[in-house]
Structures are given as structure tokens and as C-alpha cells.
Image 1: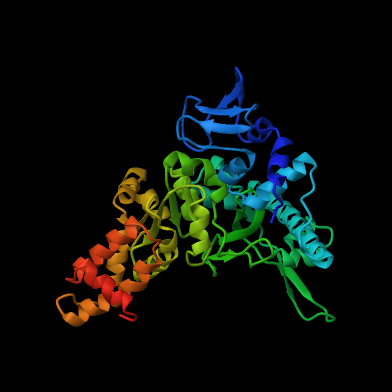
Image 2: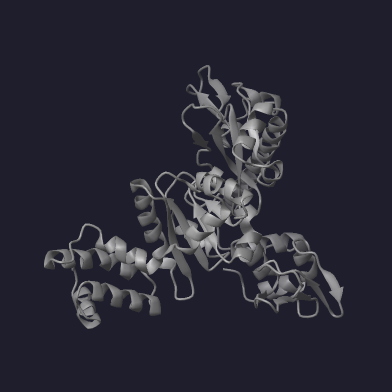
Length: 436
């Protein structure tokens, strides 16, 4: 807990024009500064920053706040990270907390370790980018996937060569434990024995995974030929937890607000191919099912999320998991929809075969969360039978009750009751009675 008055003291030492000006091109206009709003797409500036009030305000979308809120909303920072960043700029020490000296020292050590790992991964990313420019084979592969040099540069794509110790030319100490801790090098053998070390990523197109702040926290690698595994991800590290991060979120931040929704897909190449086709607001989960943390992170940038899945059985299962993750966050002012492509396509192949306009039509026809919930509850149920209707109600109960209290939950409850041939009152009485 920060003591009372600290936030106001911090804000009084910060120039909001300088903070915002790092991310938005501002021009003085009388007593304020104006620029294009970072929270929605516009061509005429309606975004103002007031030095006297130390606030920003957009007359187009209504975005408003102080320097802390700006960093939280525009950069996706957690509140305390935004406070810490501003305090560092202002030369202000954060108040001592109730932690013991040992706990504070451990926290400082962890922050230093995270920064060191970030530096290691950044150097590796620079090496992979340089290697891509020197590899006609990797360049031809990306061109064959319909990707331009501009898109490759925007996402920082690179190439890991076929050598077993390619990173030895980048890092003076190839045996540095940090390389293994960062997930770049695999170590075989126990401590005290002669250990074998080699690069994790070899002969792969490299997709750097960035945090919402733009720091490299991991990699995905796509094999160029027909080897296995097709995709290889960084292991989880102090920087990288798959269930929290979304590929492409850093690159998509501005486009999310301009498009008005986030498009969640399943693969790195899907994100990059969609960006090439004009869907720069696509992000991807990282080889794992969509989690509640993924959804919460997305809703820091937009109030509308569209999940895209393949239309096969695996895609349907993944959609159910995404539904379950989204339900607790589906407030009355948020929209969640589900898009199912034909079984023979993923987003990458779909836009290459049928074009961006056809994909846009698929997005427009995406299934609303309320309908997806009802369809999920009805799976395996014959509604012509009492047993089927009872089963449907039992399957619907945890889904509906995961929704936040509000109008949407009431509306969905009514639709569930109607599908089961019951009234809303009967449904509430049944569910209030315990198991059912």
C-alpha cells in the first residue's frame, strides 16, 4: 500500500507533456498541446494535454486521465509499474513498504535479474534479425508466405541458422548460465559433469515475443522445412509465462483502438499474415489455451474481443476453453464473439486463398458470447426429452454463474430457461436449490 499523498506528490513532480510526448507527437495550441489520439483512430487531432491541469483529454473518444493513467491505458502497464516508472523519471524513491530487508533485497535482485535476461534476449533478437538479412533461403520462405520486408521489420522477424552453437558468436561466454535461463541454450548433463550445450533454436524463422512495453521476453521459432516440431517456443522463464502473454500485443496496441476490437488467433504466422492483409489488431496465444489472464490483459486495451478458431473438433474445444476464460470478464459494456473458419483453413491460409474482404465477412458473422454459451450448454443434449433439457440446464449453470452480475447475465439466464421450456423464476429457483 502506498501512503496517502504519495501519488499526488509524484504527479506534482511529473510533466505530463513530457510523459505523453514520448508516445504521441504533440504541438502547442494555446495553453494546451494537441496531437492524434493514441486511443482511437483519427486524422484530425482531438487529443489535448494540459500542462496546468496535468491531465490529458480526447474530445473524440472521451479518454481522460493523469500521467499514471496514460501509461496504464496506452502502454498496458500495471498500476504499480506505471508508478515505478514515473518515480524513476522524477528521481523519487518509492516509500518503504512493510517487507523485511531480506524480502526487499530479494525483490531488488529479481528486478536486476529480469533486466539482465531482457538484455540477453534483446541481443539474441538483434542477431536473429541480422541473420535473416543474410539468409536468402529464409527470406524466400517469408516471401513465399506472402510477407513483405516491411511486415518482417515491424515484427522484428529473424532467422536462427542451422549451426548448433550459433549464439557463441554473439555472447563471449557461451557457458554463461543466463543463456540457459533465458531459454536460448539447452544444457545436457548434471552439474559437476562435462555438460553439452547447444542452441535451442536452429534453422528456424524467429518471432520475438514482446511484452506490452516492447521488451523481448521470449521467442517462437518456425522450422523452414518439414521437420518437427513445426513450431518451437521459449520455455517459461522469470520473464515469460505462456498463460499471461500474447504474441503481437505490443505491435497491435494502436491498431486495437483504431479497429475497435482485438482479434485473437492461435499462431504467430496468423498474426503476421493478418497484419500483412490489414488486420493489424490480431494477437495470438502462445501454444496454450486462452486463459483468464489473457482476457484480462486484452480488456485493458479494448472492450471488444473476437476469438478466431479453426472449425475442426480441436478448434471447438479451444473455443470452449476461451469461453470459460472470458465469462468472468464479460460485463454489460464488453463484447466477446467467436469466429469459426472452415476446417481446411487457419487465418493465414484463409486470407492468402480468399482475401481480406472474405475474412472481414467471417469476422462480421462471428457468434456472440451469449449464443456460444447456449450452444455449449446444449452439446450432447436432446432437448425433445426431459433428460436432455435437464442435462442442458446442468451444463449451463456453471457457465451462466461465471458471468458478472448484471443485465447480460439476466438476459442469458432467460434464454437458457426458454430453451429448456422453463420460466426465469423456475430456473432461478432450481439453481438456488443447490445442485441441478
